[in-house]
Length: 308
Ligand code: HEM
Image (cartoon, rainbow, N blue to C red; front, side):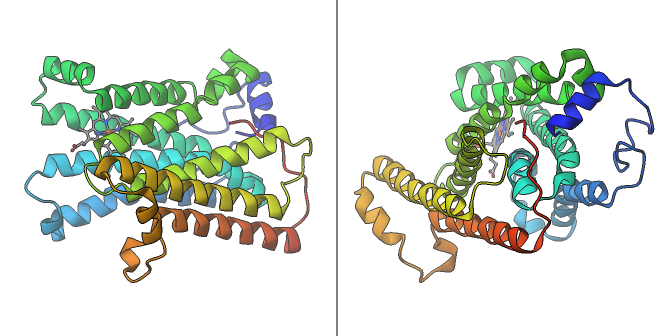
């Protein structure tokens, strides 16, 4: 939610223009194309899984339950990252209505994360003692559990009623915990990855970019968008850090020289092997192009101050 929306929700009685479950309607009760599009996006993983489980069985493997545990964890992380991307995207695209769907995406992330642990419990034959001891004894599960608790707290306080009860400022402070939760989810992702860490590294690079963007808007004293050169600098710095951190990580784990790993970053023979640093740079350049196009052709409105 934007600052203005939080203040509105905190100070005005609930006008109840729609039932709470009618998530496809906006606050004024009108049908919202954007909300419907996000709802479809939230069901994409279910559609893919349904297809794979009926027509693409070789993809599922010998342990279907484990396969769905991986899918739900993966999509929980994707939606968590998507909810973090709303603030940069709505500011850079000068599209404030995007803020209206952040809550939906965040709650979607929680629903996938909750399904993820429920499936894990099912995989342990509903032996809750075994589940609890696994969570206590294995660090990556402990971290996953703390992440889930954090997401649950944010989902439970995501309603307008809770914003009113907590007050705008306290609500905002609580919900800025989403960055710490995102970090924990990434650590859990890295820890459970056995061999190729390209996808978690790419996700971590995007997360670092979003964090860097947030610092930029927090510590600049202007309400306007950061200029294009700052977005470019941010993308180059974060991409370089992604290359370096990946090379050092691989160097430590496989006992090879990080410099040799860095050299392979310039190897474009196999497109599937393109290093995450390039992908982070590519994503940064796409955002930069969006900024340039919107600055040139869009209405120049100062972006609203942003919460988490
Ligand atoms: C108590 C809570 C949790 C438990 C017990 C748990 C358990 C697991 C397990 C067993 C795996 C598969 C590991 C393997 O097969 O070796 C996994 C993978 C994963 N989990 Fe969790 N998890 C929890 C919470 C979360 C949360 C809250 C998120 C994200 C918001 C998350 C994201 C992931 C991701 C991204 C993967 C990897 C998926 C892939 O293979 O692409 N997990 N988790």
